[in-house]
Length: 493
Ligand code: NAD
Image (cartoon, rainbow, N blue to C red):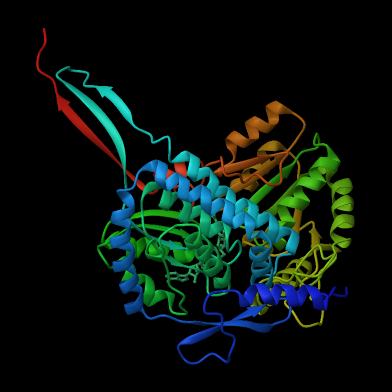
């Protein structure tokens, strides 16, 4: 398949957006710098400093001091600032979307969707912080009254992945600011530019710069050891792979740092015979292909019941075959590149292993021999359970489908993994939908719905997919401590 290329106008407009970044540079990186590449072209688009662990600890000091002053502001004040941030992000929507597309590779339409989704977290927490959770209890034995309240947890370390470079940052910064915390922020090395622009816009809208200290680095190991070793850091919120999350939990254990971990997924999809075929195909397509399949909630193992499987595979194959590859900022592309060359090689090997073991290739399957990290939208049917693709997080536009007979068999297949982030059920029976959802060992379930994430929902995983929740009011509690005052009462009898 040929790759649609961006027009000169689109390229120029998106490059102009990059050049508005504070301190923008694009030269051959020196030893303590690194390059950011455009996955659509493999060209360098910016050069950034790779900061030392000492620099990171200096940022801890700055953000800690600023956080103490910020914690003393009123909820109304913080709410007003966050509402101004929301308006300013919206006013800069096109600029943000261009930067996301150029450094991460999602299409411009998807990048615009991410800007809205990411900004919605800021608006949500601007409102949520005005309704602090607190409680009043009576001592059951009499003699005292108990008040509970929330206090900011203190300085937060926020570490984000590359796949949603804006949303994964605002989903952390917005509740941290709402709760009254400063933060040290480490964006992914592959996509730091979106974070730089988002934080710059937040500062322009009134958030003190000292509260949000970004550290770009190509040495995350020494960085996290130094920062988590500093007793001023009281919170870590990490989104990324389970392997790195586990290392960070080990480091956080030393100073008993409150931890939120949004980790890897391996989402099962169950399509039952009684599903509405069109709705199921559309839902599974979205659950698979959003963000080019590079999402922690992406449909990873698609199990389809025998009675509907042939018709489902045919309809999904047709949809996958019609997906147009193209530069992220091109007009008309449905699917941009994956993040880097390693991802292309990994997907190529997964498809080869599956077909060697007997899977049927129904659409796509190849990486075009052209510049950019492209991989075709691919459907594999009858994927054997022992193939690599059935046992790994695919993180790309490759759908792996297999078939099942009974509901019990489907549940056993779905839960047969150490991961438990998202699951999906497609059926027209309400009873079946709820019974199956209850039996899935996942933090969230999309029922006839391929895009379950929402600012009002407490997003997070079970088992090795994580700890804690982001979004909704639960996401604010991750940046708070619960305290109580037990007030002795004089006997009034
Ligand atoms: P990753 O774990 O390789 O990297 C995530 C971040 O951690 C990056 O910023 C990276 O530089 C940093 N990092 C790596 N080693 C570190 C260390 N020792 N100390 C401190 N920071 C370190 O993951 P990735 O490849 O960027 O992202 C893909 C993974 O993220 C997938 O597994 C995906 O499922 C997961 N993810 C989960 C969620 C969720 O909410 N559960 C959301 C998006 C992505």
